[in-house]
Image (cartoon, rainbow over all chains, first blue to last red):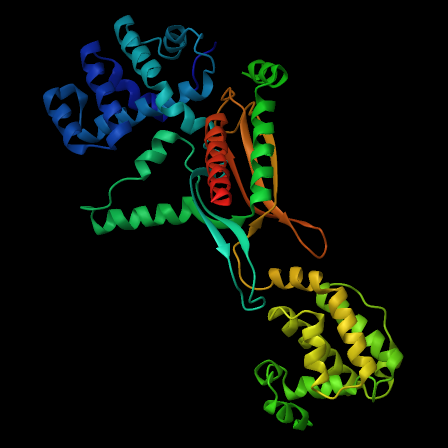
Length: 233
Length: 211
């Protein structure tokens, strides 16, 4: 496995890693925090004050973002978990000491799963079915036919394009106590990524749907499909 | 337009139902077997029925129908379509339709033909009118494909899991053409949970049927 391809700008930002492993651990912790809570300027200011050679708070933030970029590159380029991560990192950063490389390896391997799902399915985001509500109805009359009795299953399909389960759960957050701006951003997200659809079907078609979907699921479990998927992976 | 037959029937016992038929329709029906000859009347009724049941169907042109009294022929077509639609809407059988027509003093042969055609096509007319009006997209067909990614613009390696593309749709009644209603993807667990949800609906339907 060759070294990772990083831009000169990324390398410049990562030059802050050339320090004792304990200081690099602090940067990695800030990167963890960034992944979950987003940027935290107060924290970077504190880090910059604590150790003068880290430079300005902006430089700390750039280093944190470069670490996340490194995490994404590793997840994108290194497919199998059996790859020797330490060797890849050592080839990428020959100037770093063994203890720093060890910290970096722990950082990228522990957080790889966190970004893996999002990255691999992020390019073409099709709608995913998130939830389904249903109601059994009987249509008893309409303008064109006054006397009728038609059993109808009405369903509401909740679809959105967020590929990861964890992220979808994050979307279903409590809106109370949020600022106007946050609510607006959430509405925008909803407009772009969510779709709720009302459809109906009859009992016969419903049974046909169940049978067809069961066929699909059974087919996916056949040895042939498993072999192909394993072969590709 | 001659409106007198409609107003005279207001005294009848079936006045409420007869009042459903407007004077324009009554005038159109009176043309049948009168201004329009009986063979042409039969043709006109058959064409009107065909248009009602299959609005997209191509009907062979009948120039002689419109050669003389084109306006009368058009009005009669409108009258036949309206009569059948009203009869179907109110659930009349062939006999009830005949009774309605007999009160309008129409040509006897035309009444026979209208009643016969209506009785013969009643089921189709009901099915046709069931489809008219507003309803949510009705799913009657489901398509699936299993897909596994190999490589992508954002990742050099496969996700290592097959995913399902599910397409729900229906077929157009007239042309048989398939129309997609919605398409989405899901993994094996999500598909299993969808199947479970649909089975839950089916179970509830069966329970209701027993009750």
